Length: 274
Image (cartoon, rainbow, N blue to C red; front, side):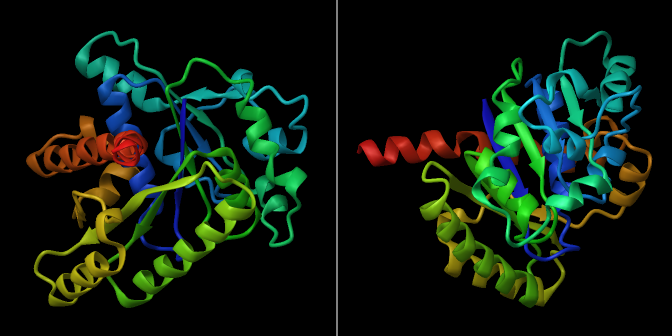
């Protein structure tokens, strides 16, 4: 089971949109996937069209991690029903561990090792998934540390803009320090350049800067800014099941991005053996 955190130091770069795009690609590919919404704003939960029926949110499960049953409290994403209507019956799995403001009690900078392992404990008892995507809050406080401790990969999201690129560089340094002290098996799957405007000279300049700074860690493809993305998310739809050429192209970008993320560890292992 691959556990991937989607993180950013700076808010507003489309981190949640990337999480939703990767979840959409996983559903389309038939990869059994669990999305864990650790952001107290719970935007991923909303975007996935979740309709709970008495399940416990992830914040309360973290509080009682030793006895909490994450598997019994996941909710199917609303996208699964939409996909079935459009494509016929499907065995694809896309479940959600619901976010809530309650998880904010753990978003402290002084979180201890025991608290950092709460999600690891919950996930250790979960079966049936090939992929877990964790949507982190836009900070390096306790919830992100909880996510990183439970993960084997981290995807960083950035816009090709000065403050976002600088924030990504700081996040890379923080991630390396965290890996050395707490999670030696954790690695960076890569950096997603999101909301790229092809007509922007500033974006072109910053993308060149990112390639120089991060090298092969800058993932391909970059994700262009999409005019109807707000409409797709507002309807709580998968981009793979939204009509139109623009959505079809966006779905293709996320298909390729998901393959790169899932293959990142294997590619590095082969390089190391050589």
